Image (cartoon, rainbow, N blue to C red; front, top):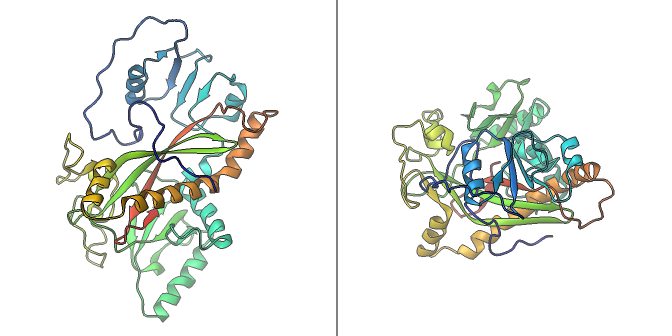
Length: 349
């Protein structure tokens, strides 16, 4: 199994979640662009609507090219890239997506692929909450609910749209009988005993960089975001299932709460840094080395799930390339991870 380096190799400003979030730091100052010199790296950012990408391009000293220029060293796109575009790239060019990476980026695809791995290697894939994909696995879910009733147990489930994002459409239920059978949903067991920070539930946004799929090369960034709920956590019961500010840690959800605390420092407020969090763990005698080892293992095993799909798609785009050739694709991925009260990491998406 591939191993991860101990230190991050992502250079320059911290990666950011382009869909919903900026880092906890204040915004970067724009540098004055210089005239192009021989050897200057060029970047085409016509495919992004996010100003943060342009800020980082300027911060790195790259030169932005006209929108119609397809010869840039770096091409950045917000959405998935057509395979024909990857096929047309020259060896000196880089684009920020791999073909086939949707196999772990979409909730329904991730759930399907993880279910296969759990069946074949149950002892290795214990970091994914029990999951069902509706409508295909509706019957299996109802059978599970019936078994719980026989044992007089009750569990909470979190229900997500199959291809949703940013917390939209998420709800909690305790009565599985009421779920519709034909809707396209992802249903997961809710982790009821999370590790709490000052009484609040939180999750971690971990950033990784994939630079190659042949062989698979992954780099883990040792910082990121701690995203906290905005209401003190109480285990789910019939009276608080709709209190999403308590149960969900999504920034896109909690930013609407009047209790959301915006702070320019990394150790206060509703969004903090993982660097600060690891210092917090160390100060409270938790095993920081094991924490990062567990995170690394989760990341590697998740990428192993995607690797066959990505490798096949990439080879179809770049036929004739010998194994180990420089990849024209790279990808920055954000892993949403929840820690339970024993500091075990669970992959949310």
